[in-house]
Amino acid sequence: MTRSGDRAALNGWQVIGRIEDIPPGRTRSTRLLGQDIIARRDPGGTVSVTEADNGNRSLPVQERYGHVWTSLGTPERDLLDMPEFAEEGRRLITCGGITVRTSPLRIVENFLDLAHFPYVHTDILGAEPQTGVEDYKVEVRQPEDEIWATECRFFQPQAAKSASGGQISDYMYRVTSPFVTILYKTCPIRDGMWDLIGLFVQPMDEEICDVHSFVLVFDEANSDEAMLHFQQMIFLQDRSILENQLPARLPLNPRDECAITADRTSLVYRRWLRDKGLSFGAIP
Ligand SMILES: [Fe+2]
Image (cartoon, rainbow, N blue to C red; front, side):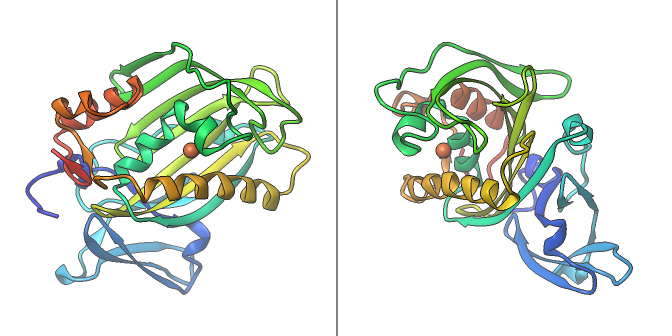
């Protein structure tokens, strides 16, 4: 990518793997925003990240939410805040990176789309004939500069691994950076609590990324493995759709919006990216 443009991508914190993907004494070579990088954890447990060329320049690094994060630029803001990670009784399942051959922005946009459930995740997250999306609210919240879609409701035959039958699920979607999105979903076994499902997308190149997902849930019945398999099954259904979407890069020109059947959250996401001048993975 060009060094001049795209401050929004360069100066953000980007995920580069799970904490356990970089064990002590080991090295992990990967790619971020078109740049080869190397992450190492010394035997004492400290992680360092450098660019593979460019004189092995050191990059900032932090470990949070089960993952390792770095930045090719100078982060202007801290990582997103998820206080739920400190709540007692929740279980964190990190799913590991899954490589998808499309723009990282397509991954986030697809995740925000309620309308695809009955068609892509048939009889799990949605079912015909209950295909209608009820009205919901979308806003860009300031000063945190995050997109929130709230009051989303959808009928789901099996909303989560812990669900024992169909239910109306309440949802909230949150986008905290161009490549990070979190879904808050009615917890099937605890009234008034939300389960979290999140995607930390690692933008490798403009049309390829690793998607690192997690669930942070109340669930006393299912094993980590069962929850992992449930998430992976859902995501692999998305992957085959995503890899066939053309163009792979996300069009940000407002004129293209008439031509696509995007929902409101998607339109707000595209506008928000455009306002940031984001171009990595986009058709500006
Ligand atoms: Fe999906």
